[in-house]
Length: 195
Image (cartoon, rainbow, N blue to C red; front, side, top):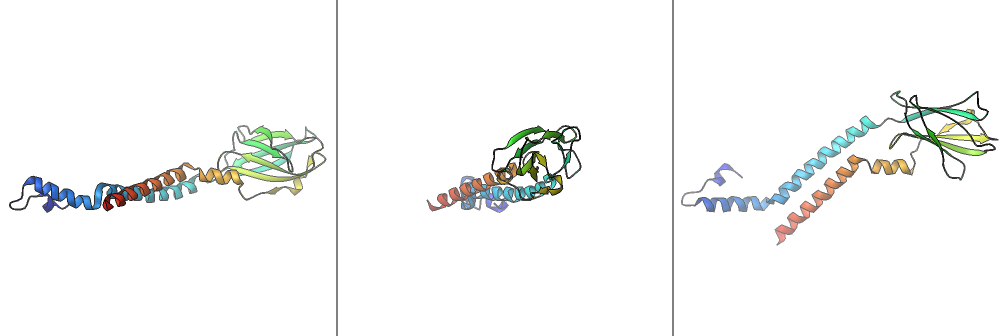
C-alpha cells in the first residue's frame, strides 16, 4: 500500500480511506501474501537442503581381515571417508537366500571380530550400518565356512533401506510440508477470489 493511499483525499473521511486501503490489500489478499512467503521459504529450504546433503554425505568404508587366533574368525574395520571410526555401527551377515544374522556393533575403533557359521557356503553379504546414508556392503564368497577374502567385492548401489532413509530425511520432509502448505494457501486464495 502506498503512503498516499493511506491518507484521506479531500472530502474523504479517515474510515473511507481505510476501507479503500483494505480493498486494495484485499486484491492481493493476506492468503496470497502468505503463499508468496511460503514459496520463498521453500526456495530457501531447497537451497539449504542441497548444501546440507553435501556436508552430511560421507560413506562408510570397510575392510575385512582374518583373525589369526580364530580358525573362521574375521575382523571388520569400518571408518567414515573422513577417517573417523564408525563407532557402534551395526554389523550383519546375510546368507544366500536367508535371513540376516545380527553379528554385533563396532567398538570405539570401528572394529568387530566375528566367526562365520561352520559349513557356510555361497555368496554372503556383510553389511555395516552406521545409520541413514552411512552403510557399506561387502559381497563375500564363502567355502566350507571360510571367507574367500581375495574375492571380496563392494556393492556400490544403495539398497531399499538407503532410499527410504533419504526420502525420510528431515529436510525432505520439511520441504514437502512447505510445498503442501503453499498449495493449501494458494487454493484458499483462489477460492476466496471466486466467491
